[in-house]
Length: 188
Image (cartoon, rainbow, N blue to C red; front, side, top):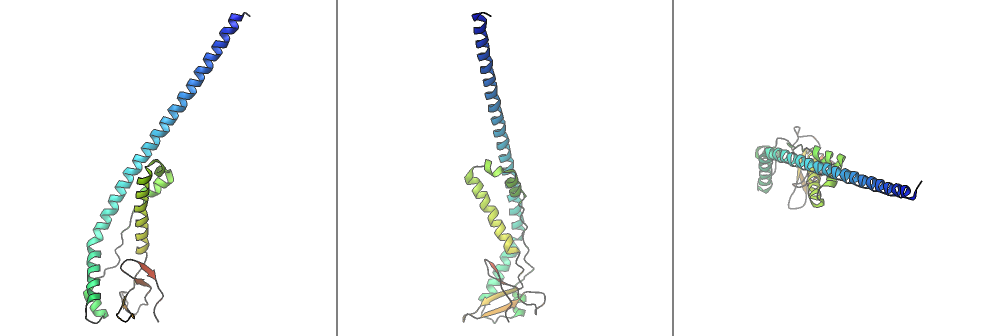
């Protein structure tokens, strides 16, 4: 074997190693590019899902808005009235037809969590979306309250209970305030 032939073998080997290294580098680069494209596609799909779901939830809220605004207005008028509070006046003044809860969809949120698509979104945007779903969850917890009474304080701090249950003698199960729901035991 001559020196020249060994020299060629060394350069051939070096060339093959360089080609393999370049091939591996290009394959890794292509793989990373492909994964980045998949992550961007997942982020775009998650954003489309969020937008569609939030619009659906907004429409569901709007369907019941007029009823809830009228209920709150009537209840405030009832509470502000100088007339003595009575069940008859309550039923005539306040047209309560149940909670009429909004059933919020959260499938897009659940899917984004399961697929980790939130990690592919801008962190500030993901945080804002998270706040929306957190508020919806808090609202759903309010809807879990099954108010059978409305409690109002008079000027001396004593509480009067006005039943909204279908049976006037039903024991109260919850105290309803305009902005939150607290379970409370029945007054004895």
